Image (cartoon, rainbow, N blue to C red; front, side, top):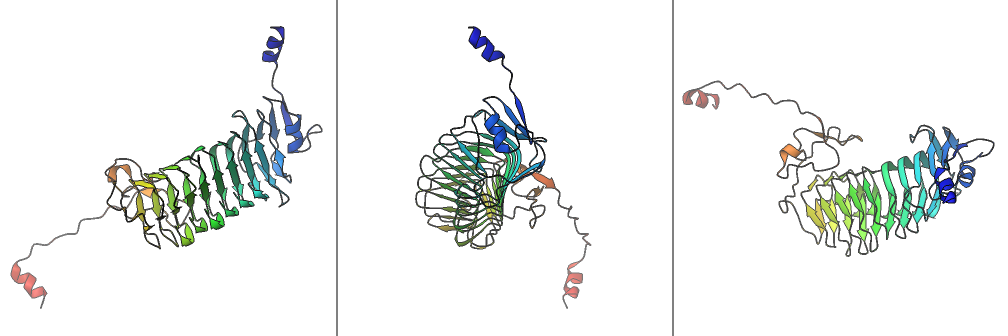
Length: 360
């Protein structure tokens, strides 16, 4: 009883980086025990293969991504996460310069479930999962996380394999894969990821510029926006291979610069989606045109700024809740601008003889 009381009463320690005790981020993590925090001063740190510890919170001093940059300079991946429980926190970092066979920015395996908040993965490279690789039953929780300009053979932004996380509001932008899944590569049973209100824009790949799905994966993709993605072979927005069982619900897939909006030879379910203006057509493969089926439409989404990162919509958009039969938002971004009111023309009464005279 005395031992339990002393353990419960023990206070957590905060370790500061840089300091004489902790000159590096890895030194801070190594000094910490379960329940401790490591706080990193705003600066750029040239470290790689940082091994996280379960139950340790790693945070920048402001908690914002721009405060601390961790640059691996191509010498290895940035973070290594294995066997981490849900009390492990990574908050407020820019992760860049990582290079590895899997997970250039971060590797997450062996049922790890860390929480990542306010993290930017930018400019990392790998064979699979340029920004992040998740497998082995891992289920990291991401909040305000973006994958920008990462590169890989498969999964330019993220690769999921035997991983079923639930993510909301994650951004995949400008990532590239030489093979499959420019933004996200999603394969293997039981990958049943749930993606809500995520944005896939300007990603490129051979197949599945925004998203590639195969090998029994069955992600639920809900209220997501796919815009200006590109594939050199098939599926500018989305590619569903033969063993993909994805659900696409209230998604907006528009303006793929090369390839179809959705290309499928698998068995996805597409319901209440707007698939419009894709260079290779709206649908391809064996799926067939879903327009008019299951409340799917093919109408201009009326982006506020279609050529920029602003993918919010006009009030007249068919994706706005008031303008479609579902009464719900289609896509990840709501109404943020208003179309100019159209003035009714002035009509002047005229007789039939006057009208005929105008035609002579």
